[in-house]
Amino acid sequence: MKYVVLLFGMTVTAMSAWGIFQPRALTQVVLQTWRKPWGMAFAVGVRLVLGAACILAAPDTRYPLLYEIFGYLALAAAVAIPLIGKARLDRFIGYWADSPPALVRTWLLLGLVFGSFLVYGVV
Image (cartoon, rainbow, N blue to C red; front, side, top):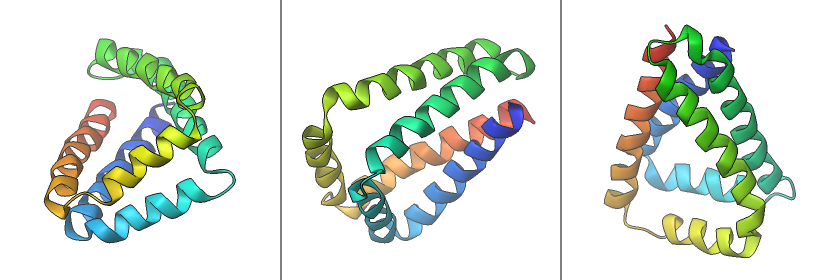
C-alpha cells in the first residue's frame, strides 16, 4: 500500500507543480474530468483508494498517526461527495475554475506541499 500512497503523492506533486505554471490548463482538465458521466464516481473512487491505502500503509510510514487520520478523512470525503450532490459540487468546482489564477496557484502550493509530504512519509 505504500506504493499506492507514493504514486498518489507523486501525482499530486506533479499536477500541482504543473498547475502553478499553467493554472487555467489544470482547471480545464479538472472540469473536463468532472463533467464526464463517470466524473463523480472517479472522485469518490480516488478518495476510497487513497483512504484505504493511507490507513493500511500508516504503520510503515514516518508519521503513522497522520497517515491514519488522513486516510479516515479521505474515506469521509468519499462518503460526503454523493451526499453533497452533483449540483452543489458543480457550482463549487465552477467557482474554483473561475477564480483568479493567483488564488488557484496559492491552493496548488498547498497541494505541492501535501503531495511532497505524502512522498516523504513513505520513502
